[in-house]
Image (cartoon, rainbow over all chains, first blue to last red; front, side, top):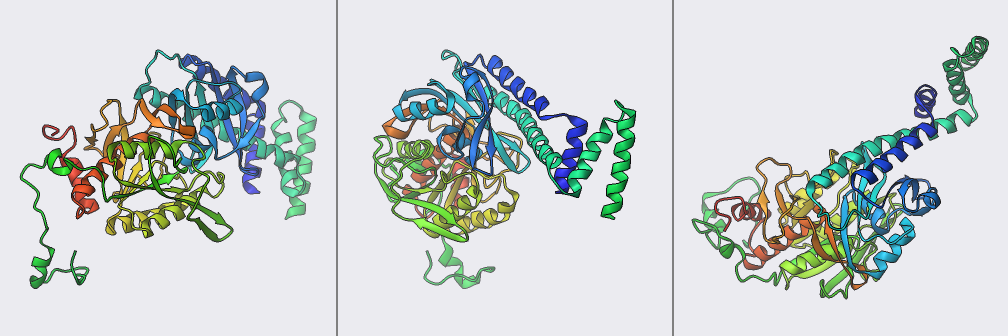
Amino acid sequence: MSDDFRSAVAAGVLGTEKNYRELLQSIVEVARAIFSAKASSIFLLDEATDELVFEAVAGEGSESLVGRRFPSSTGIAGFVLVSRQPLVIEDVLTDPRFSRETAESTGFVPKGLMAVPLLHEESALGVLEVLDRPSEARFTLAEMELLGLFAAQAAIALDLLQRARRAQQALAGEGELAVLARIADRLERRRDDEDEGTAAAAEFLATLEKIL
Amino acid sequence: MTEEPLPAWSLPADAVERIALPEAWPGQVTREWAWGGATGAGVRVCILDSGVETDHPLVGEVQQSVAISIDGEEVLVDEQDSSGDLCGHGTACAGIVRSLAPDCELTSVRVLGAGYTGSGAVLLEGLRWAIEQGYDVINMSLSTTKQKFANLLHELADTAYFRRTMLVASAHNMPVESYPWRFSSVISVGSHEAADPFAYYYNPSPPVEFFARGVDVEVAWMGGGRLVCTGNSFATPHVAGVVSLMLSKHPELTPFQLKSLLYLTATNVGDGS
């Protein structure tokens, strides 16, 4: 709970889910542009249900895919998440099953894709995918490196998004720590409203007294 | 090799003859000496991965398909797994080993596909099971980032090393700590960009010890399909294949000797012959 409390305070100070969503969206937009790809997406692992969820999509399929879920350890994205290994598929030579499964998880049938795990500290938080680079461009290890750099950035954004969500839950929850978190949030707005700040400070002291 | 095991930590004078190597290495070790004429026959290779499609033309016969899972505290080993490959990746790795060592014996041990939660523990138990079976080579094109498994994986990697099971593991090309490729008792593999399946480089700046073909590799995939793939995942079975050839010609080689032989025959060492 103390982690959630810290997250809650941090969320009040640092930003909101909306900010982090925008950051994720910007990462997939840039990834798509840099690789001249048809689409790019970020999946977040939902540990509670063991599923991957589309969090941000740029390019083809972008309207309909956000929020869609699929099992966390099957298909390309699932494999990349569980094995921690980045994977690039350049050319689908003959494989109806691959096409069908990726179509289900991407919204269209790509000819190739790059998928990289989003690793933060010990955890795999999700997967970044870039779909259909121009077919004449041969893949190089330098691009793999670039993909890795993007993944590091995306992983940090995903971590912040998860913290913001936990913080929201803490703020909306019951109990003394939730009250403290709400007070911290309100104290943060003190500069905007002097009276609000005073009231928040009074509530904070009362709650603190109760706890002690 | 010897009738009675030698004392663990010492070598008595009367035992020196007992550890004489059956075959001295030539002054200059060549690829011809290391695996010339070898097909992988007699070598048991384990693909620890997402499963292997058994009737794929690029994979050929799969001796056994095993699936590892964990139910609560209990480790379940299904020794007749029929679900094949859940992703395609294991089939790709198996096909690469087969292309280099056509007569080796392949076994699939599936440790992926049962969900993200608990996947580290399944990987660990799969590796433990594979080491107990005494495979000559285990191909691991995967890793875990969970610190709590690092010590156990390290112990298992050392156990494999001393039991003459050569673990060949994919290195990570991202700035994170992951295992087991970082352990010195395994052969760690990264990618180079050349198209030659027999080109491999020794890295004088470990932890990644060798680089093998890993860019634009045509591989077997699910549904009898083929894909062109890139990743250290595909470099690793190239080294597993070469090691299988070496063991097929020189079954007495230990993991220490196999690493030395890989070094001596590496493309960037000496004249690369």
